[in-house]
Image (cartoon, rainbow, N blue to C red):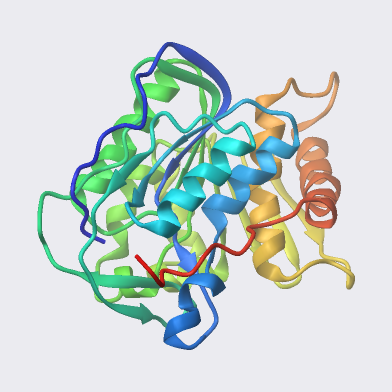
Length: 299
């Protein structure tokens, strides 16, 4: 998506968060009629941010939203649940057509009416955990992610990368460009589906990561954490929520875990088993996800 720079919503002051969520929403939808497309959409980035507030965490949100009825409604909704939205930018977008790709992701085809705006985390913000989401094969965007991750790690922040993407964005692009971001992540969460959309595989992702980082890979049967400790496999129960919901809960549970102190005497294997087997399903069973947003009609 090409956007034009918009103002930061309000002046920023030094703030310390439990989690900063930075990135771009990758909207997913079924195949609704054109008039219903806006109401059918949802985003893992948005849902995970909401889940974190349910855990009474102090959350900062850095993203770029379209300056239309939907974008303003989402901004107001996030502010209403005490997400700090001071680093959200509203941007004008020229949309000529809505495209729904084979992965369920959708976006508008836009005219290049101005310089693309990157997500920016204010220098005055710091956090225990930085969640990055919504990678696109654009050098400037990937470089911005790297800059944020490196600054965070220098400050002792845990960097979590949610490796979700849109097939329309990644089709025909070299997936190896994500290695520049993978090297700076402490935890990478993805599914085999996410990897297929980007055009890579688990072995390639793991090779690009640091040896002391952890890869969390989920599939229809469960989730596996792979790191210096070995690997921990957790099976999904038959009563588990839909794959998309549980994947979002894995990401949220990882952020919640690193925002809090680890259990005394708990091994890395035990910690990952608890997060994947108990904490993530608990979120899936109890946290409301994205509520429908108003239609664009009348904009």
